[in-house]
Length: 607
Image 1 (cartoon, one colour):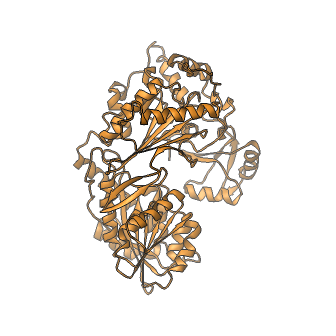
Image 2 (cartoon, helix red, strand yellow):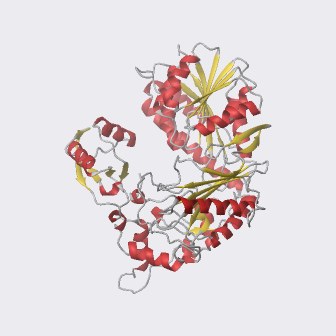
Image 3 (tube, one colour):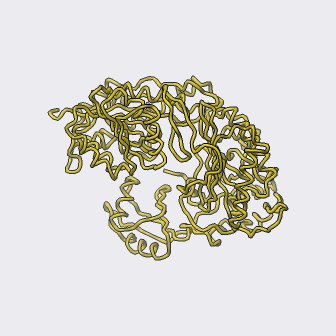
């Protein structure tokens, strides 16, 4: 459980690795009308800082007084909860009451829920307060909004120690150089030798599998003897764990990075492109230049330097997450082994006219095609005027110049990648991952492969020429369009793609393969895991006898992994899958993350 619920007020976009985003949208206010003319239209750095103090000052709740939507204004606290309960269990309980919160956060023994308006909050208060749940009578009360962590931190830093007249002592982090602090935030394992990083990650996956084993003991009592045998054989985990597979490249390996454009530290620059030193929830908005960050290629670093010169001369400053003043928000860069470079720019329009926005588009195009950025190698450029609070929006980009996509080479095949399509960020590491999946799925010439969450089709296409048929499912239309192009590009004609949420179509797809001689499912879901309906459809399709689960976030996948093994029931009419072996694959050197691949076999019906 979280130690704090301050994440409720992480209102601004932050694209750096593992930074917190808000999922709330609303009309941006706090914007200032822009003056016409050729002179610089943005305030100076000093003026912006003055505006920050004027708008927010020392008021930790000033953000609730603006016209921006924040669900913090419609918040309840729920206490007297049962001693032990699951997060999803509680969400399901609220759903049965027809209560749909915007956010739900558990802190110690209190649950905080927020709503879209006063009416929804009032209805929820009436339904929850006094509700009997597992022997406890719940107590619901109106709750105070969370304090703005940025203002909170500013107040703490300006406050002298009690009776001593001194400011708080500097922490060890405060004594580090800006470069070291940035590397700690973005690549927290950078100080460790790579071999030590691998040991650390493998041990973390072993600990997760132990946790998984305990959950299976709890949820699958009929597997008691099997689990006991697995515990003895594999060391308190449910299957064999292979040694972690390292990334072939540990430096400059990322083919995609999302760089924040924000205020520089100490007001040195009003617009810096790079990574944040921390999250908004940690009270940090400053951005630093990532020249020494290990996972960036030299090509990307050179591009950042060039684009920084553009920002320095731009008439517009960075969007400030506290005051909502400013424009430039994010620079996303995608690159490939073939030398292609795609640039995606996010810009807050504030109150600029369409004519002014067109001038911004023209300025970018001229910079990269004729100006200081003409030698940076940009082969595709997109721009987006975005009002949303976060840059993780589905709003489309406007194409400016160059090619519509970039092309990447992987396992002797070529893949086209559009702006919003998913593609593994470490191409060399992805080759190791996909080869592992190929080996473990045990596919034959008569095999049908279900490629769930297929993205641009990479996994299925690398298998297609050795199997009977591949069926891919992906909700991103751009990715499906890329997958179809990639099939043609590589001469593959035994693939079929469905553009939809997997939970909406899996039941029909599994029906279509019923009776096939050999079916294997490969799932590579987002961090939150598969929708429950997808797991149910896979379980209930008895033709599927093997499953390869690729997880980039094992905690998000845990419920899926448990459901695959649960006893048969009215809903789970197909036999369970049992884990056979697992292997971590490191695609993210210097960070805390890695992929985990688990092979499952369907339990024999007569077992």
